[in-house]
Length: 428
Ligand code: PLP
Image (tube, rainbow, N blue to C red):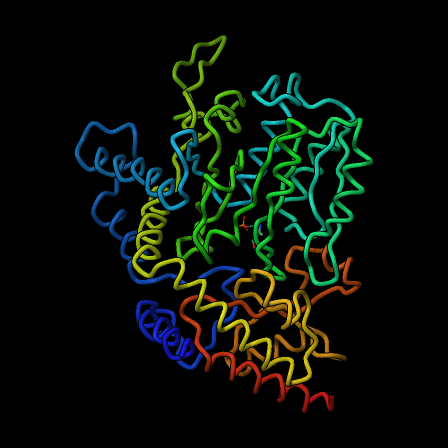
């Protein structure tokens, strides 16, 4: 029943994505790396260049003013999409990576912030809490600032199935009783296991310590509804390209009370109110963080992507992926493939989006990926920018198939057939 209902979702949307007409017979299973773009998004980008053309903010003529209005209005579109209250503000960035770098860099320069652990700026010995399942984007920027300021990074370890280990977290809490924890930064959804992490205990701990609670939303934003009001993060970061939008644009959605106290990230045009030979008066947030001409066309595309997803319905996407994921895991399991992350029985008790990591025993993931490509199947092979997770699993790489609204059961069938073919070639 679910199968036929949800199959209709893929069938209903597939023709919206020109990729499939341009790449007939291709199975795209790499949406966790980047999603395909519907025509509506491509049209919105073209519309900016073809119809408006002008730069924003500075023009006193119609095209510039209208483009400015759409660019500024998109901040509300994003806030509505995330159920962010008026306490939050949207800062455009290039991607999740830049958003986290913005936070790490400006927090490194910040003084007192409206959080009890932040009476002073970051001091030597202060602690940042991350987890072993973070993407490098949520590790390296913090390491860079830690190296400069002598901070300590503590990693919550993972269970074998990729869940954040609560016993490791308990131990960390005991060890850090007398330490000043300033930042807790975690991803809501893993790009390798697809697990939707329950971040509530980590947020409560951050609150108890008077620390900042930051959420990497790169994978969370595209698969299900986000309720930022309930998540109560101080900052949530995402990239447009994961949710059907263009590459080169994303957003940092953060509490205005925090942004107001942070220094600017980059200097230049648009982020100032007044410049003299001796000093510059900065613009207010969010503009103080947006130096130079931004990706205007990208913002047009992002708005179109959010509107498109709104028409499809995020819950429909989540339910569809859930069905496809289970089907895929069962098929791969039957094909003798090793599944990383949650097991099939785990699916009963945990939330997981359409990301399946696996290895064919005895065959290097890159060989698998290359042979899949010969069969017009796009999957990923590598560490997926999660080397700490690979180290925890004692492997260097996995294969990863990731689904989105345009995939269907036949894509999984093709993947499973190709697995059998690879095994035959390698005599496994
Ligand atoms: N965080 C997670 C969980 C991701 O999956 C990714 C990208 O795959 C990123 C951060 C980085 O996103 P971007 O490369 O768009 O900055």
